[in-house]
Length: 334
Image 1 (spheres, rainbow, N blue to C red):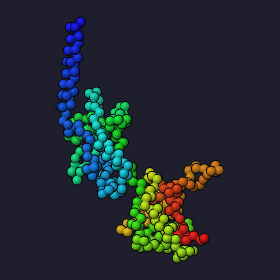
Image 2 (cartoon, rainbow, N blue to C red; image 1 turned 180 degrees about the vertical axis):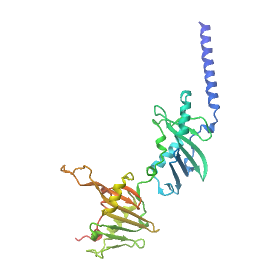
Image 3 (tube, rainbow, N blue to C red; image 1 turned 90 degrees about the vertical axis):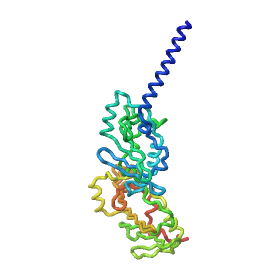
């Protein structure tokens, strides 16, 4: 009995030694730099370039306190934060099994997103991001210079990561229209094609001075209400649209361009930069009023064209307080 116990113990010990040697050899046979996917110091990252096999690409750059998309637009900070956290937290979950090895290599060779990470114009890491595993608990990934793919995930996170490495420009772009410090705004004008008498221009020729004029030459019914003017300008410190509408058909876009706009908003800052937003009514598409009657026009959202190139959707809830009329700036009569 004692002899059997000794033999059993010896078998256990030998098994543990064999396991250690196998795992040590399998891991040490792959250089650390070819399996080290994470970027430890994401604060040092100032550029990320991503490109797919069909040459769709996006460039993200850190510029001061924010990021830009394709060197043209301000980026969504929440999307940037998720990307940087992903680059910091990804870990190898497991090597690719022998049965999946050939398929995963072929997949990474034909269908991947190449992710290049830079610091001060120096390439510090290149990752090839492939598709999810069979049970979507990780992604196949491979580092530049390696011929060995791995299953990579974020410990504690359930799901796959490839959706965080997306290419679509509008997905990265901020929904911000205006984001100004109060004193940086020089002028705001609203043109109302439906009611020209309601059109106006609010101007601050210098900090602390304000003027309100009408393009029709009309005069305010009472003296200008400086408090109302200051409150109005403050609304442009943070103003967003709801979502991009670039998928809107060309037919709809062309018809809008020939239709009379609802309102035309133009803001100029003290650097001379001008931002223009043109809005149009949007068909109700089956919406009903509170009494159950069909609406002709959407009572919640409008089409809008931002700076002549980006089609977006904006909410009346956000813009009703912006689309006031000329008399809004007159001192109330007691």
